[in-house]
Structures are given as C-alpha cells and as structure tokens.
Image 1 (cartoon, protein in one colour):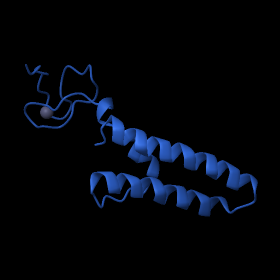
Image 2: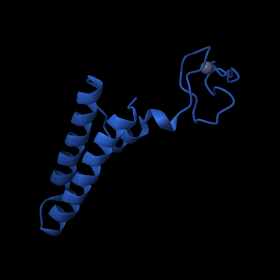
Image 3: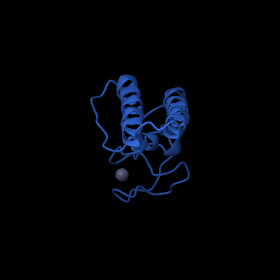
Image 4: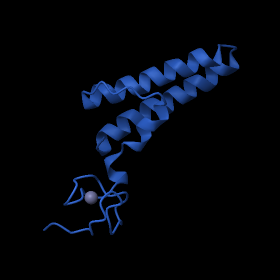
Length: 100
Ligand SMILES: [Zn+2]
C-alpha cells in the first residue's frame, strides 16, 4: 500500500509517462514499445517505494494500492476494509470497530 505522498509520486510519474506515450504515438514510435516502457517506469517506482519485488503484469493495478482508498484494518483478520465507510469486513464478516 502507498500512503498519500508515495501515491502522488507514482501518480505523477504515471501521468507524465502517459503524456510521453501520447507524444511518441503521434511520432510513429511503436506503441507496444512505448507501453512497455511506461509499464516498467511505473512498476519500478512502486517497487522502489515499497521495497518490494512485486511484479505486476498490468501496470495500472499499481493504482489500486493507495491506502487512502481503503478503510482501517479489520480487527479480526487485519485486512483493510474495502472503503473508508465500510461497516463490515468482506473477508471475514466482522463488524467494523472504531479504535479510540
Ligand atoms: Zn476481517
């Protein structure tokens, strides 16, 4: 998972590379080569930030690892709730318990 600052790093890189991809595409550069390069930059940035060797086949999946898009951890199974307003854990069915 990426915190807000880390997410902004990956998002900025992704946006910049999408613009590069669009420019390259209009200049006759092979689209698959440009897409592979975009994939590598985004995944490498994600792996660098998280110190993981996680290789995603689809670079856009990195965009689903933003911590703020999820709720707090389930008190029973420790998985994050699906949203900030979730009332139950979809994995184990435990009701949300607010800490504090
Ligand atoms: Zn749970």
